[in-house]
Length: 497
Image (cartoon, rainbow, N blue to C red; front, side):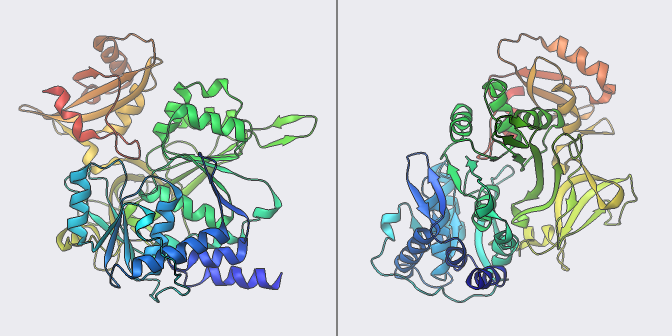
């Protein structure tokens, strides 16, 4: 017990990417860390040994402080390679394996990488690096490149405190006292996937990792393995519902979780009902699952706010981003930088331990994003609510200026998606000589549904003010998406000529 307490204290203070797995191995030892869909398994002790071995291989190929791009498949080794690169005193730069060659080339050139790892065999050294290269928790730990929805991707400079320090308290989670497993199919090179893996490792929650999200395969895994936790993005939940989630036995799930985009309340309610609070002998599943939603972005190393909808209670769903996580402060400001009153709408500013130092090689963008006193301008529009809560309205770039009116794309999308034949909607502004911009909608219908543009326009006209109603409509089978399944809105403009 004394050794366990000591290890947990070690994990909580001044941990870095290069040291955290070894500290966790002291706590969790031979417990399963991850199982992959090919049947391979890894314990905490085995993972720590791999990190030490790979770190030694990195150290002989790259100088201290240099950037190392990691371009490997979306397996757990990508996560461990990031830890190994850090242990060697370098800065890992993970990239999504779905990136095109020219996108990867941009990251390599922009980061000035000395080494590009495309396979663990490049660094699988016979020696081990028994001690990590010393660094400060507030030093840059990794570069996570943005998805590039506007312009070229930029490297967010995230510190050890941002990536490790915010989740290491998870070692207090009573993992040995109950059986948990998290089904995971997120991209590890994206900050949400990385943060989820780090949090699960600290909590002692074993991961079942699928390298790519396919709704049928995820549902199969949850149902057959009796997984208790699933973390995804709203688009994943939509696709699982379309793949027949309501026909599956998902009662093993006690916690559904979402992030990276606004989660529709009705969708979250459905999945709560698919899960259960507990499964009792001779009784079976009782209650329903909880739903947890986080709010964050790459520029804060993960999440800054969260909300929980407990089982059997219709709370914590909808547009609120939730309550601030410990260490974070919010401000809601107008265009002049002045705080708005309760009920007012403005840009959300965030300050706390995870905020980026800046963007690599981009001082002007960094200065425009992070203030001199450490406030991050998120670019998200929110309405200031009571008790420190904020209600998400939409991205600043998703505000359509239509004839002097501000149209929030998110509001229009959610209204259209309430139509029973609509599976998903994406609303953008397209240039117009008279009005400046006009709202336009790209629609994905439910399987087998038939619906005309005029019928959709009538629906929108019944539920929205005239200036918010899309003036142009396009039906598609699939929407273009980023690596985390967000709709790539810049690609939609081409559909309107």
